[in-house]
Length: 73
Image (cartoon, rainbow, N blue to C red):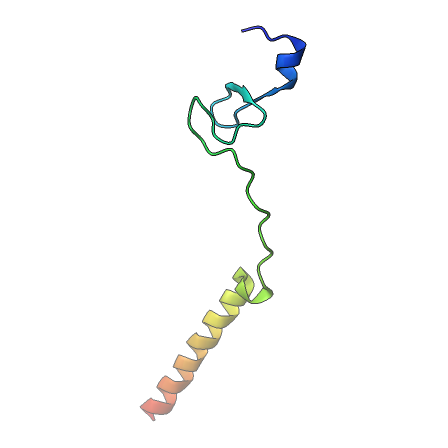
């Protein structure tokens, strides 16, 4: 399908189905995908990262080991 210059400036391609759609569209008329831009992700606090999860897990493990040996003797 050929577009003239006015129509080409007012269209974009859908990132999901690659069909031409209007630039102001919020939902693709072809695949019905939601085209709203996602909000910027908030940066997670340092205590929610994988490293701190490992620290928490190791701490709990060693606490159980210590409690087990105290309980055993």
